[in-house]
Image (cartoon, rainbow, N blue to C red; front, side, top):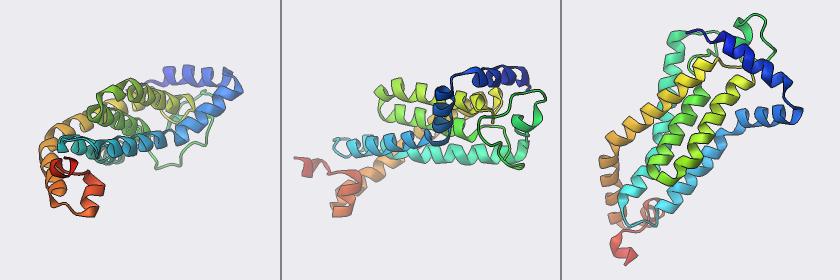
Length: 204
């Protein structure tokens, strides 16, 4: 895959953008994933009050499948060994942030993979969140090219990889994790109730 020309166009556009747009993009690409962390906690906390242990299971699976997607992405990086465009693309504008060190390979984008997995995992846990998480994931992916540290194909494959790993993992694990959440609730312990919420008897 070669998306060098598109990379040049996007990084040229980044340099022509207003300074405040550049600064917001730099902050978002570095810290935007923390917003998904806040959403993980929020969805889990709200799931504790739901009657069905499946809701708790889906909330718990969202960060777990995101972590799994990251492991898959990092493993693929070590096999492909694609150099970062900020070093490899001749004539491209300088990146807005420091180019990652040699050995921190480009394909696929870990940020895009994590964002794609988090978006899908959260949407499967709370469907209405797709209207928020999907645009956030797309924005994260675009920002990695905008600041100059990834090719467009890095982030496109990262999004697809993260979303696919998350969706397939949630589908495979929902039933056993739901059973586990139900068992934890049924134990009635204080820590169990704090983690998984009260069972039906205690809710009554």
